[in-house]
Length: 273
Image: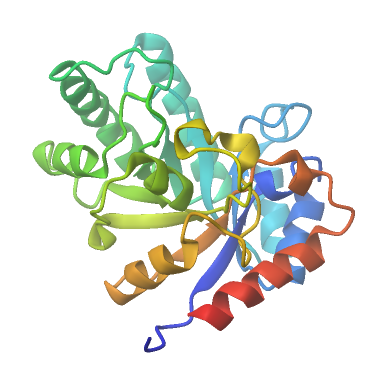
């Protein structure tokens, strides 16, 4: 296969969720990742521990790390007054911290999946979010999930909704290699992709329909999701953004030295591209 453009890498705070933000940003620099994603779901850690956005932004700048996104506004396509208030709070935090985007994660509990209902729900949410995000200079990153219970599995439906509400420029897609594999949707939408999340599954016994977040490890030669193939196709189709590591496995979270493991995974991916 011909070589493709060498990608840039980023780290999602989920690679080492017990690290405080300053240590996490230092980890980014150690592995050569100049971009990072912060999260609002890490118990006892920023953002939900009350750490001011300005402090997070300052720590990132001190480490010479740029903030890609806050991950995430959950259940974004179940639009309610409470969701609107949460969206405003997170968008304000993103602006104050200097984070470029807010990841938007759909309902994933089996509800809102009916044909017609799910398409309407995403359009309602995106219309409301467009002005909230635009007024703060924050991009919306829509992340379809591959789980059968998810109300938005298809990137095609997400792309259609973004186009229908005149959201090009306000929203882009997240291509998550794990969720793309689970959804079984062939289309990649590289031109509408603003971020790629990468993680691998190496457990030989788990069936695709039974794959869950705890199976998600760093990408290596035992990966079953064809991360390298997905990345190659995205890069060949023009995607020029970062590849952000997002493993959820406790086996990764408890590593004594995540620096070495991340460096090895980066080297593996680069060598095969």
